[in-house]
Length: 312
Ligand code: G3H
Ligand code: 13P
Ligand code: ZN
Image 1 (cartoon, helix red, strand yellow):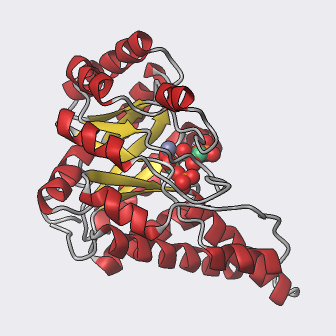
Image 2 (cartoon, rainbow, N blue to C red):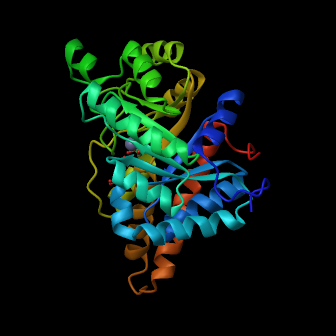
């Protein structure tokens, strides 16, 4: 168990420490036992604080009690601070069920709503979550590909610094997910990767809370090439270069969400084993190496984000 006697800690606690020391904590999406083990083993080996993230679709897939039970069991023996975070919660009912199940942090994603509706929904969540000591992440702006968008279209999608200030003040969120040109998934850019760092700087100046970068996967070409060799069809896949991630951290991002890179590593390893060992049919010998592949990717992220050796 982590040293202060708490099993799971809040994102606010993890990220405040990161902000004070200038590093970022990875939020790694899990889907099953193997991806959870990869996160726990990586954070233990790197001595890194870590955020275990689960989306509503993962909760639907695995079952809330199974999922929360697994993560709580992991936290009982993990020697590093860990939080269990709802990623992209869409409604107060999901938030409430997750808090009751033991989540220590929740995201309410009202980015599909207009400004006032997003504020109203987010406020309801902060009121509920804060009354139970749980931290809240809100989102303003939309994570959409903006590469070929006009200036007006970009303004409509990316986070406006002034609006961010108002959003944070009126909702009392602990953390804010910003849109600066990233998007979810494996196809983030057709041309050169480009993020709006000027906007991030302006947001950092206006807004005092913790800042979050979604859609931050790198989509490593070596995984794409290997997966392609074993039959995947991923042409045109492209992600965020490591240098951009470092710059985002230097400008104040303290939480970085990674899902796609883990999915790619997991399925690439499975493809390799099934192709190379056609006689194998023991799930542990197929999923075990997939877990190892995910773990290695996570360890690399922890070093990139500067969170290695920062377990406090
Ligand atoms: O943003 C979160 C994920 O990358 C997509 O989530 O497929 O688990 O719903 P999901
Ligand atoms: P990626 O698809 O870039 O991994 O982003 C994941 C994410 O933002 C989860 O909330
Ligand atoms: Zn996201």
